[in-house]
Amino acid sequence: MSVTLAEKAPTSTLDPYTDQALLNPWPLYRELREMGPVVWLEKHGMFALTRYDVVVKALRDWEAFPSSFGVMMNDDMNQILRGNTLCSDGDAHHRLRRVVIRPITPAALTSLTEEGGMRGRSGRRPAMRQGTILRDTESSQPICR
Image 1: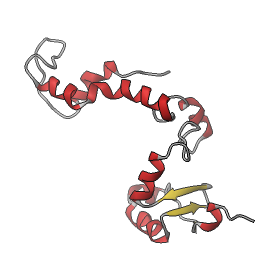
Image 2 (image 1 turned 45 degrees about the vertical axis):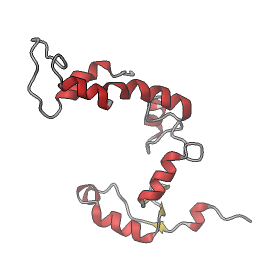
Image 3 (image 1 turned 30 degrees about the vertical axis):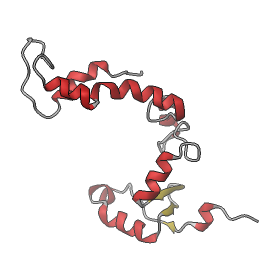
């Protein structure tokens, strides 16, 4: 008889979605991290990956941990988001990501700050402030409805 990961991983009744945990998650994160690199959250029926190296490994192994089935805890949202950049894997993910990332590559961002680069509707360069680049590049971002 084989043992599943859920049977091997420590189990926790902690809830990372309580108001208290959302307002100050650090004590809960510490407690989960101390339990192990992978912890089964009973209330939500899912695993919490508590260590950086484990998260990176999971994110890089899309065949073992696919996003194409959804990344939300809500089946309705998973259905709505299916096929977008966040909920795609492999070649489909890379094709979508190239479209989204192009306007914010280092070269594209540098060109926005050079003479003749980013200009507002008035034809003048706007003063750089937080959010300016996002507002001025958002028109090139694909929108799915």
